[in-house]
Image 1: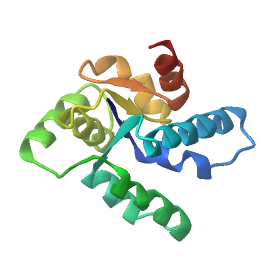
Image 2: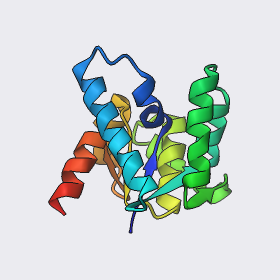
Image 3: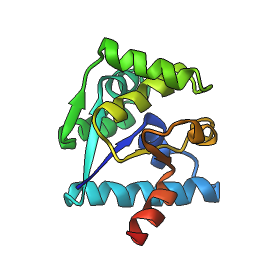
Image 4: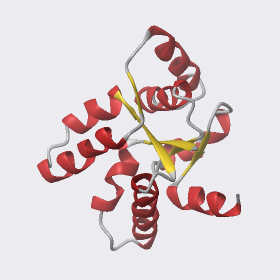
Length: 146
């Protein structure tokens, strides 16, 4: 089964301003991915960093909605020295430190895909060879082709 990691930007996308067509399309794609996870067509990976970032969310409804995905995930990872060393490799490629930790989490959980709506990560994805980084729309397009 395909295992995926959604970063915090991806989890929050459906709560963003739907006036922008790209945001609306990414939201629809992300919600479809959620349905695939619920129907056990995809495996969801979760991390300590997702939980930590979500705990800081000032919007209670968003926080509760996103936190529920931890229980649906099939694998969870905690911080380790090895993980932080791997994240440094990604940071040295110009990826922001917290984003690098997310990617390292996905790598150590053997995820096939890292999904994000963060343009900064997507623009630097060519520097990450260990895992495929896509936005939700690209992921669904690729999934359809398989």
